[in-house]
Image (cartoon, rainbow, N blue to C red):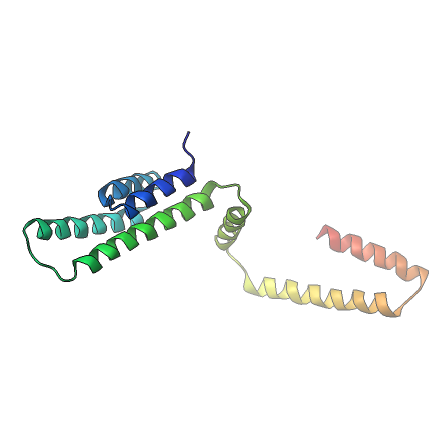
Length: 157
């Protein structure tokens, strides 16, 4: 079984060897499986640009910008391969970096009540200041009991 990284390495090898249509076919297949319409649209644009570049070349039309266009096509292919690999890993990789990206992505999808978040932060800072003051300035058995109760309450939040 070929793993995900080997597939993208293979695609990059195709691009570097100038096998653009083969690389585009594989990228198109991956984008389709991921239902990534933006990447599929970009792949179609690249394929069309590449088609016309080859068409002009086969007709013997001299194009002083041909090498720039070709380099741009290869660069765009690499960018799509990288973006698809990143998206695929973010969806289902167990690697730490991608699990964090999954967490952040899920977090971004939740609606936030900014006022509630600010209130919670301010409350925490006020409580932190109070506990720091108690810890540094008061030494009494009853305070130890309050301290334990407060930390227990804070740990449950």
